Image (cartoon, rainbow, N blue to C red; front, top):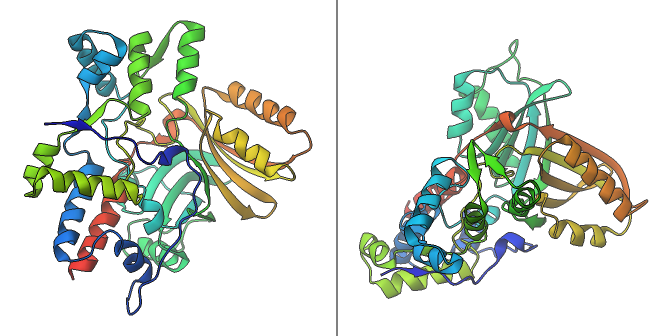
Length: 384
């Protein structure tokens, strides 16, 4: 028996502020306070861990072809073929339950520009390091690499960086660490979190041009409708019977645990995402730090509905007070967007710092690896 999970928490379009509850006499009060709401004894710990890891990995989560067929009024075999093509051509990644508890576990985001050699060992480190969420190869000032990593706090971040060179995971330059420029931001101050927002840009391009090719795959109206539904979390199912059998519990127990984890915002409802977290295939990434001098709330309301903006943060770095990650077809489209923002809020936008990353500069990483790593780390901590 399979069922589609009812959407309870629309996390991807919600601005939130994480609150932490400390537990007395606990060596890790941040984790203990958070996990105490998720687990209450060893059995629950084991079960929730296995449920979390399975769902975040995508175990027993799949596309509901019957739902798509009914919704789009198309034959099931036709829909099944299109779904297969969409995944095989890396237009979308298969469905998972996103682990939104990641922002509770790692409230610190580090964005570091540095100079690293173009070597396979470096690429392998990008793929394997449990803290590296995203990495890009792009020239900015004297740097050629941008790394985005998640951490528990500043102390943990500094120790992590030092160990990279002590353990020789990254090379020294003339006996010293390579030059770098780091910015630290709070994952508690996310203004917008909607990695799939650009799907509406793809839909618009197909409608206006009559064609849309991503990774060599030509999307028609049917393919686009399927992509749109899957990126909005529609027509995705979980095989609760098989999951319960894997876990060694009855189906009702597994279902209840899943709904509890969604309700308490450890995971969100299942969804398909683009292989690159911040952009669809063949789109450039623009990372913008902005100084919003006035009408900041109006600006924030605007970007929440803007399909170009996938993530946004409230920050404080010099004059800058907003950080945006935006997806654009090309530089011309990005410049048009800048002009539109200036016309929308004249005299409100002050200083701006924009860094661009071309499609080929985006290093494709497993989006779930940081989440799976912190789930494993917490499990080992509590088991010990």
